[in-house]
Image 1 (tube, rainbow, N blue to C red):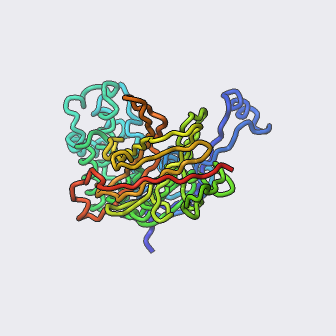
Image 2: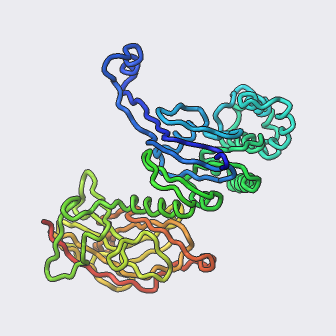
Image 3: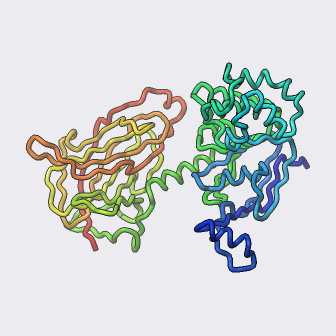
Length: 432
Protein backbone atom coordinates (compact mmCIF):
# COMPACT_ATOMS: atom_id res chain seq x y z
CA UNK A 1 0.00 0.00 0.00
CA UNK A 2 1.44 3.38 -1.04
CA UNK A 3 2.12 5.92 1.67
CA UNK A 4 0.09 9.12 1.20
CA UNK A 5 1.81 12.50 0.94
CA UNK A 6 -0.29 13.93 3.77
CA UNK A 7 -2.14 12.03 6.49
CA UNK A 8 -4.62 13.92 8.67
CA UNK A 9 -6.33 12.24 11.62
CA UNK A 10 -9.05 13.90 13.76
CA UNK A 11 -7.40 17.29 13.42
CA UNK A 12 -9.08 20.10 15.40
CA UNK A 13 -8.27 23.68 16.32
CA UNK A 14 -9.93 25.75 19.04
CA UNK A 15 -8.98 29.34 19.81
CA UNK A 16 -9.45 31.24 23.06
CA UNK A 17 -11.32 34.49 22.51
CA UNK A 18 -10.84 37.14 25.22
CA UNK A 19 -12.90 40.28 25.60
CA UNK A 20 -9.81 42.27 26.69
CA UNK A 21 -6.07 41.92 27.31
CA UNK A 22 -6.53 42.00 31.09
CA UNK A 23 -8.51 38.76 31.04
CA UNK A 24 -5.87 37.17 28.82
CA UNK A 25 -3.09 38.17 31.24
CA UNK A 26 -5.04 36.94 34.29
CA UNK A 27 -5.70 33.63 32.57
CA UNK A 28 -1.97 33.27 31.95
CA UNK A 29 -0.78 34.07 35.49
CA UNK A 30 -3.73 32.37 37.26
CA UNK A 31 -4.21 29.18 35.23
CA UNK A 32 -6.18 27.29 37.88
CA UNK A 33 -9.00 29.84 38.23
CA UNK A 34 -12.19 29.91 36.18
CA UNK A 35 -11.38 30.57 32.50
CA UNK A 36 -12.01 34.10 31.24
CA UNK A 37 -12.18 33.24 27.56
CA UNK A 38 -14.82 32.05 25.12
CA UNK A 39 -13.74 29.00 23.09
CA UNK A 40 -14.08 29.22 19.32
CA UNK A 41 -13.72 26.07 17.23
CA UNK A 42 -12.18 27.04 13.91
CA UNK A 43 -11.69 23.46 12.73
CA UNK A 44 -13.80 20.49 13.77
CA UNK A 45 -12.41 16.91 13.69
CA UNK A 46 -11.05 16.36 10.20
CA UNK A 47 -9.55 13.16 8.80
CA UNK A 48 -8.31 12.61 5.25
CA UNK A 49 -5.39 11.28 3.22
CA UNK A 50 -3.89 13.08 0.22
CA UNK A 51 -1.89 10.76 -2.05
CA UNK A 52 1.34 11.72 -3.78
CA UNK A 53 0.81 13.45 -7.11
CA UNK A 54 -2.70 14.71 -6.34
CA UNK A 55 -3.75 18.33 -6.78
CA UNK A 56 -6.19 18.90 -3.96
CA UNK A 57 -8.40 21.98 -3.65
CA UNK A 58 -9.86 23.44 -0.49
CA UNK A 59 -12.81 25.78 -0.90
CA UNK A 60 -15.25 27.61 1.36
CA UNK A 61 -16.25 31.12 2.29
CA UNK A 62 -14.06 33.36 4.46
CA UNK A 63 -13.85 32.10 8.02
CA UNK A 64 -14.51 28.48 7.11
CA UNK A 65 -11.18 27.16 8.48
CA UNK A 66 -9.17 26.86 5.26
CA UNK A 67 -6.23 29.04 6.32
CA UNK A 68 -6.26 27.49 9.80
CA UNK A 69 -5.82 24.05 8.24
CA UNK A 70 -3.01 25.25 5.99
CA UNK A 71 -1.16 26.92 8.87
CA UNK A 72 -1.34 23.69 10.86
CA UNK A 73 0.01 21.64 7.94
CA UNK A 74 2.81 24.20 7.49
CA UNK A 75 3.65 23.90 11.22
CA UNK A 76 3.00 27.60 11.70
CA UNK A 77 0.25 26.71 14.17
CA UNK A 78 -0.28 23.72 16.45
CA UNK A 79 -3.53 21.73 16.41
CA UNK A 80 -5.64 21.51 19.56
CA UNK A 81 -6.22 17.79 19.03
CA UNK A 82 -5.48 15.18 16.42
CA UNK A 83 -2.37 14.65 14.32
CA UNK A 84 -0.97 14.98 10.82
CA UNK A 85 2.02 13.52 9.01
CA UNK A 86 3.83 14.99 6.00
CA UNK A 87 5.78 12.56 3.80
CA UNK A 88 8.01 14.69 1.59
CA UNK A 89 9.70 18.07 1.27
CA UNK A 90 7.04 20.74 1.81
CA UNK A 91 6.94 24.39 0.79
CA UNK A 92 4.12 26.58 2.07
CA UNK A 93 2.78 29.81 0.60
CA UNK A 94 0.42 31.16 3.22
CA UNK A 95 0.87 34.91 3.04
CA UNK A 96 2.95 35.58 -0.02
CA UNK A 97 4.91 38.45 1.51
CA UNK A 98 5.38 36.83 4.93
CA UNK A 99 8.90 36.07 6.14
CA UNK A 100 10.74 38.79 4.22
CA UNK A 101 13.31 40.94 5.99
CA UNK A 102 12.32 44.46 4.92
CA UNK A 103 15.88 45.79 5.16
CA UNK A 104 17.41 43.16 2.86
CA UNK A 105 17.16 43.35 -0.92
CA UNK A 106 15.38 40.77 -3.07
CA UNK A 107 18.40 38.52 -3.68
CA UNK A 108 19.49 38.64 -0.03
CA UNK A 109 15.95 37.72 1.01
CA UNK A 110 16.00 34.67 -1.24
CA UNK A 111 19.08 33.36 0.54
CA UNK A 112 17.55 34.35 3.89
CA UNK A 113 14.28 32.49 3.25
CA UNK A 114 16.17 29.55 1.80
CA UNK A 115 18.22 29.23 4.97
CA UNK A 116 15.05 29.30 7.09
CA UNK A 117 13.66 26.43 4.99
CA UNK A 118 16.88 24.43 5.27
CA UNK A 119 18.02 25.01 1.68
CA UNK A 120 21.79 25.16 1.31
CA UNK A 121 23.32 28.32 -0.19
CA UNK A 122 24.86 26.32 -3.05
CA UNK A 123 21.40 25.00 -3.97
CA UNK A 124 19.91 28.50 -3.89
CA UNK A 125 22.71 29.78 -6.15
CA UNK A 126 21.81 27.10 -8.73
CA UNK A 127 18.16 28.20 -8.73
CA UNK A 128 18.71 31.95 -8.39
CA UNK A 129 18.72 32.75 -12.13
CA UNK A 130 15.44 30.90 -12.72
CA UNK A 131 13.77 32.56 -9.71
CA UNK A 132 14.84 36.06 -10.81
CA UNK A 133 13.76 35.46 -14.41
CA UNK A 134 10.32 34.18 -13.36
CA UNK A 135 9.68 37.04 -10.89
CA UNK A 136 10.40 39.70 -13.57
CA UNK A 137 11.44 42.35 -11.05
CA UNK A 138 14.51 43.64 -12.92
CA UNK A 139 16.70 46.06 -10.96
CA UNK A 140 14.31 45.93 -8.01
CA UNK A 141 16.01 42.66 -7.03
CA UNK A 142 18.83 44.87 -5.69
CA UNK A 143 16.54 47.19 -3.71
CA UNK A 144 15.35 46.68 -0.10
CA UNK A 145 12.06 44.81 0.21
CA UNK A 146 10.51 47.83 1.98
CA UNK A 147 10.54 49.55 -1.43
CA UNK A 148 8.49 46.73 -3.02
CA UNK A 149 4.77 46.92 -3.56
CA UNK A 150 2.71 44.04 -2.16
CA UNK A 151 2.37 42.66 -5.70
CA UNK A 152 6.13 42.67 -6.19
CA UNK A 153 6.66 40.85 -2.90
CA UNK A 154 4.05 38.31 -3.98
CA UNK A 155 5.85 37.72 -7.28
CA UNK A 156 9.14 37.07 -5.53
CA UNK A 157 7.67 34.74 -2.92
CA UNK A 158 5.74 32.71 -5.49
CA UNK A 159 8.74 32.48 -7.80
CA UNK A 160 10.92 31.11 -5.01
CA UNK A 161 8.27 28.65 -3.78
CA UNK A 162 7.83 26.99 -7.16
CA UNK A 163 11.53 26.82 -8.00
CA UNK A 164 12.96 25.22 -4.84
CA UNK A 165 11.72 21.83 -6.06
CA UNK A 166 9.14 21.02 -3.37
CA UNK A 167 7.56 17.56 -3.32
CA UNK A 168 4.50 19.08 -1.67
CA UNK A 169 3.30 22.66 -2.24
CA UNK A 170 0.53 24.15 -0.15
CA UNK A 171 -0.62 27.60 -1.16
CA UNK A 172 -3.29 29.96 0.10
CA UNK A 173 -4.78 32.11 -2.72
CA UNK A 174 -1.62 31.74 -4.79
CA UNK A 175 -3.47 31.94 -8.11
CA UNK A 176 -4.49 35.56 -7.49
CA UNK A 177 -0.88 36.79 -7.57
CA UNK A 178 -0.10 39.91 -9.60
CA UNK A 179 -1.69 41.14 -12.81
CA UNK A 180 -3.62 39.03 -15.32
CA UNK A 181 -0.54 38.14 -17.38
CA UNK A 182 1.43 37.05 -14.32
CA UNK A 183 -1.56 35.06 -13.04
CA UNK A 184 -1.59 33.15 -16.32
CA UNK A 185 2.11 32.51 -15.86
CA UNK A 186 1.41 31.15 -12.37
CA UNK A 187 -1.33 28.92 -13.78
CA UNK A 188 1.11 27.55 -16.34
CA UNK A 189 3.70 26.83 -13.66
CA UNK A 190 1.15 25.05 -11.44
CA UNK A 191 0.11 22.97 -14.47
CA UNK A 192 3.77 22.05 -15.09
CA UNK A 193 4.19 21.00 -11.46
CA UNK A 194 1.07 18.87 -11.75
CA UNK A 195 2.50 17.14 -14.83
CA UNK A 196 5.72 16.52 -12.86
CA UNK A 197 3.71 14.60 -10.26
CA UNK A 198 4.01 17.13 -7.44
CA UNK A 199 1.45 17.09 -4.63
CA UNK A 200 -0.30 20.45 -4.53
CA UNK A 201 -2.86 21.82 -2.09
CA UNK A 202 -4.66 24.90 -3.41
CA UNK A 203 -6.86 27.14 -1.30
CA UNK A 204 -8.69 29.63 -3.49
CA UNK A 205 -12.02 31.36 -4.10
CA UNK A 206 -11.45 30.87 -7.83
CA UNK A 207 -13.66 27.85 -8.50
CA UNK A 208 -12.63 27.85 -12.15
CA UNK A 209 -9.03 27.21 -11.08
CA UNK A 210 -10.13 24.39 -8.75
CA UNK A 211 -12.10 22.76 -11.57
CA UNK A 212 -9.15 23.16 -13.95
CA UNK A 213 -6.29 21.99 -11.75
CA UNK A 214 -7.64 19.85 -8.93
CA UNK A 215 -8.38 16.13 -8.90
CA UNK A 216 -10.38 16.30 -5.67
CA UNK A 217 -11.65 19.10 -3.47
CA UNK A 218 -12.67 19.61 0.15
CA UNK A 219 -15.45 22.03 1.03
CA UNK A 220 -15.19 23.52 4.53
CA UNK A 221 -17.98 25.54 6.11
CA UNK A 222 -17.62 27.08 9.59
CA UNK A 223 -14.91 24.55 10.42
CA UNK A 224 -16.91 21.51 9.30
CA UNK A 225 -16.28 19.27 6.32
CA UNK A 226 -19.31 19.64 4.04
CA UNK A 227 -18.07 17.51 1.14
CA UNK A 228 -14.99 15.80 -0.24
CA UNK A 229 -15.12 14.34 -3.74
CA UNK A 230 -13.98 15.03 -7.29
CA UNK A 231 -13.33 18.74 -7.77
CA UNK A 232 -16.14 19.43 -10.23
CA UNK A 233 -18.89 17.91 -8.07
CA UNK A 234 -17.70 19.67 -4.91
CA UNK A 235 -17.45 23.04 -6.70
CA UNK A 236 -20.94 22.57 -8.14
CA UNK A 237 -22.36 21.79 -4.69
CA UNK A 238 -20.60 24.77 -3.12
CA UNK A 239 -21.72 27.10 -5.90
CA UNK A 240 -25.35 26.05 -5.46
CA UNK A 241 -25.04 26.51 -1.69
CA UNK A 242 -23.60 30.00 -2.03
CA UNK A 243 -26.30 31.04 -4.49
CA UNK A 244 -28.97 29.81 -2.10
CA UNK A 245 -27.12 31.59 0.70
CA UNK A 246 -27.11 34.78 -1.35
CA UNK A 247 -30.82 34.31 -1.93
CA UNK A 248 -31.28 33.66 1.83
CA UNK A 249 -33.74 30.82 2.32
CA UNK A 250 -35.57 32.48 5.21
CA UNK A 251 -39.25 31.91 4.52
CA UNK A 252 -40.86 28.82 6.07
CA UNK A 253 -44.55 28.40 6.62
CA UNK A 254 -45.26 28.86 10.31
CA UNK A 255 -42.18 30.93 11.03
CA UNK A 256 -39.97 33.50 9.40
CA UNK A 257 -41.30 36.76 8.03
CA UNK A 258 -45.09 36.34 7.92
CA UNK A 259 -47.93 33.95 7.17
CA UNK A 260 -49.57 34.46 3.80
CA UNK A 261 -53.01 33.56 2.45
CA UNK A 262 -54.58 34.27 -0.93
CA UNK A 263 -57.39 36.81 -1.15
CA UNK A 264 -59.78 38.31 -3.72
CA UNK A 265 -59.94 35.03 -5.67
CA UNK A 266 -56.45 35.52 -7.04
CA UNK A 267 -54.67 32.25 -7.72
CA UNK A 268 -51.40 32.11 -5.80
CA UNK A 269 -48.57 29.72 -6.63
CA UNK A 270 -49.04 26.59 -4.57
CA UNK A 271 -47.50 25.63 -2.34
CA UNK A 272 -46.30 29.12 -1.50
CA UNK A 273 -43.88 27.68 1.05
CA UNK A 274 -41.97 25.99 -1.78
CA UNK A 275 -40.63 29.43 -2.73
CA UNK A 276 -37.29 30.63 -1.45
CA UNK A 277 -37.65 34.22 -0.39
CA UNK A 278 -35.12 36.90 0.36
CA UNK A 279 -35.93 39.14 3.30
CA UNK A 280 -34.99 42.77 2.69
CA UNK A 281 -36.18 44.17 6.02
CA UNK A 282 -33.97 46.92 7.40
CA UNK A 283 -34.04 49.19 10.43
CA UNK A 284 -36.52 51.66 8.91
CA UNK A 285 -39.15 50.44 6.46
CA UNK A 286 -40.13 52.94 3.77
CA UNK A 287 -43.77 53.55 2.78
CA UNK A 288 -43.10 51.30 -0.22
CA UNK A 289 -40.55 48.52 0.14
CA UNK A 290 -39.55 45.16 -1.25
CA UNK A 291 -39.92 42.33 1.24
CA UNK A 292 -39.13 39.22 -0.77
CA UNK A 293 -37.90 37.95 -4.10
CA UNK A 294 -37.63 34.53 -5.70
CA UNK A 295 -36.62 32.84 -8.92
CA UNK A 296 -38.59 29.71 -9.75
CA UNK A 297 -39.53 27.33 -12.52
CA UNK A 298 -42.85 25.56 -12.03
CA UNK A 299 -42.75 26.47 -8.31
CA UNK A 300 -39.25 24.98 -7.88
CA UNK A 301 -36.47 27.29 -6.78
CA UNK A 302 -33.89 28.02 -9.45
CA UNK A 303 -30.28 29.07 -8.89
CA UNK A 304 -28.85 27.73 -12.16
CA UNK A 305 -30.32 28.47 -15.57
CA UNK A 306 -29.59 28.02 -19.26
CA UNK A 307 -30.55 30.05 -22.31
CA UNK A 308 -34.02 29.18 -23.57
CA UNK A 309 -35.46 28.28 -20.15
CA UNK A 310 -38.64 30.06 -19.07
CA UNK A 311 -38.40 31.20 -15.45
CA UNK A 312 -40.46 33.32 -13.09
CA UNK A 313 -39.18 36.17 -10.98
CA UNK A 314 -41.48 37.08 -8.10
CA UNK A 315 -41.22 40.19 -5.92
CA UNK A 316 -43.19 40.83 -2.75
CA UNK A 317 -43.91 44.54 -2.30
CA UNK A 318 -45.65 46.29 0.59
CA UNK A 319 -47.10 49.80 0.34
CA UNK A 320 -49.00 51.89 2.90
CA UNK A 321 -51.10 53.55 0.18
CA UNK A 322 -52.42 52.34 -3.16
CA UNK A 323 -50.07 53.11 -6.06
CA UNK A 324 -51.45 52.92 -9.58
CA UNK A 325 -49.56 52.42 -12.83
CA UNK A 326 -46.12 51.83 -11.33
CA UNK A 327 -43.10 50.73 -13.31
CA UNK A 328 -41.09 47.70 -12.21
CA UNK A 329 -37.61 47.80 -13.66
CA UNK A 330 -35.50 44.65 -13.35
CA UNK A 331 -31.79 44.81 -14.14
CA UNK A 332 -29.65 41.72 -14.74
CA UNK A 333 -26.02 42.45 -13.90
CA UNK A 334 -22.94 40.60 -15.09
CA UNK A 335 -19.39 40.59 -13.78
CA UNK A 336 -18.40 43.57 -11.60
CA UNK A 337 -22.09 44.55 -11.38
CA UNK A 338 -22.20 45.83 -14.98
CA UNK A 339 -25.86 46.07 -16.15
CA UNK A 340 -26.53 43.78 -19.11
CA UNK A 341 -30.31 43.51 -19.45
CA UNK A 342 -33.23 45.64 -18.30
CA UNK A 343 -36.83 44.42 -18.15
CA UNK A 344 -39.72 46.83 -17.57
CA UNK A 345 -43.46 46.27 -17.59
CA UNK A 346 -43.88 49.54 -19.49
CA UNK A 347 -41.65 48.23 -22.27
CA UNK A 348 -44.21 45.44 -22.79
CA UNK A 349 -47.25 47.71 -22.24
CA UNK A 350 -48.35 45.89 -19.08
CA UNK A 351 -49.85 47.74 -16.12
CA UNK A 352 -49.01 47.19 -12.42
CA UNK A 353 -51.06 48.56 -9.54
CA UNK A 354 -50.00 48.20 -5.90
CA UNK A 355 -52.70 47.90 -3.21
CA UNK A 356 -52.18 48.88 0.41
CA UNK A 357 -52.78 46.41 3.21
CA UNK A 358 -51.49 43.51 1.14
CA UNK A 359 -48.26 41.94 0.06
CA UNK A 360 -48.34 42.58 -3.68
CA UNK A 361 -46.73 39.65 -5.48
CA UNK A 362 -45.45 40.85 -8.85
CA UNK A 363 -44.58 37.95 -11.14
CA UNK A 364 -42.44 38.29 -14.25
CA UNK A 365 -42.33 35.34 -16.66
CA UNK A 366 -39.68 35.44 -19.36
CA UNK A 367 -37.31 33.27 -21.34
CA UNK A 368 -33.67 33.42 -20.31
CA UNK A 369 -31.56 34.72 -23.21
CA UNK A 370 -28.30 32.98 -24.07
CA UNK A 371 -25.62 34.41 -21.78
CA UNK A 372 -21.98 33.47 -21.25
CA UNK A 373 -21.22 31.21 -18.31
CA UNK A 374 -20.90 32.95 -14.97
CA UNK A 375 -22.77 34.37 -12.00
CA UNK A 376 -25.34 37.12 -12.44
CA UNK A 377 -27.29 39.27 -9.99
CA UNK A 378 -30.67 40.97 -10.19
CA UNK A 379 -31.65 44.48 -9.07
CA UNK A 380 -35.28 45.63 -8.81
CA UNK A 381 -36.67 49.18 -8.78
CA UNK A 382 -40.18 50.60 -8.54
CA UNK A 383 -41.04 53.98 -10.10
CA UNK A 384 -44.16 56.12 -10.35
CA UNK A 385 -44.70 58.95 -12.80
CA UNK A 386 -45.49 62.36 -11.30
CA UNK A 387 -46.10 64.73 -14.21
CA UNK A 388 -42.81 64.92 -16.08
CA UNK A 389 -40.87 63.48 -13.16
CA UNK A 390 -40.26 59.82 -12.39
CA UNK A 391 -40.27 59.12 -8.64
CA UNK A 392 -38.27 56.20 -7.24
CA UNK A 393 -40.54 54.38 -4.77
CA UNK A 394 -38.29 51.50 -3.73
CA UNK A 395 -35.25 49.60 -4.86
CA UNK A 396 -33.15 46.62 -3.86
CA UNK A 397 -29.70 45.67 -5.17
CA UNK A 398 -28.49 42.09 -5.61
CA UNK A 399 -31.98 40.85 -4.75
CA UNK A 400 -31.17 37.48 -6.31
CA UNK A 401 -28.19 35.68 -7.79
CA UNK A 402 -28.11 32.92 -10.37
CA UNK A 403 -25.59 30.87 -12.29
CA UNK A 404 -25.49 30.35 -16.06
CA UNK A 405 -23.88 27.13 -17.26
CA UNK A 406 -24.07 26.49 -20.97
CA UNK A 407 -22.51 23.60 -22.93
CA UNK A 408 -19.12 24.49 -24.38
CA UNK A 409 -20.36 24.83 -27.96
CA UNK A 410 -23.20 27.13 -26.89
CA UNK A 411 -21.07 29.16 -24.45
CA UNK A 412 -18.86 30.23 -27.37
CA UNK A 413 -21.82 31.96 -29.00
CA UNK A 414 -22.23 35.71 -28.69
CA UNK A 415 -24.39 36.67 -25.72
CA UNK A 416 -27.95 37.84 -26.43
CA UNK A 417 -28.53 41.08 -24.58
CA UNK A 418 -32.28 41.40 -25.03
CA UNK A 419 -35.44 39.58 -24.00
CA UNK A 420 -38.03 39.43 -26.81
CA UNK A 421 -41.04 38.97 -24.54
CA UNK A 422 -41.97 39.08 -20.86
CA UNK A 423 -45.33 38.96 -19.06
CA UNK A 424 -46.12 40.74 -15.79
CA UNK A 425 -49.02 40.04 -13.44
CA UNK A 426 -49.83 40.68 -9.79
CA UNK A 427 -51.28 38.51 -7.03
CA UNK A 428 -52.14 39.62 -3.51
CA UNK A 429 -51.50 38.06 -0.12
CA UNK A 430 -53.23 39.19 3.04
CA UNK A 431 -51.08 39.68 6.14
CA UNK A 432 -52.11 37.47 9.03
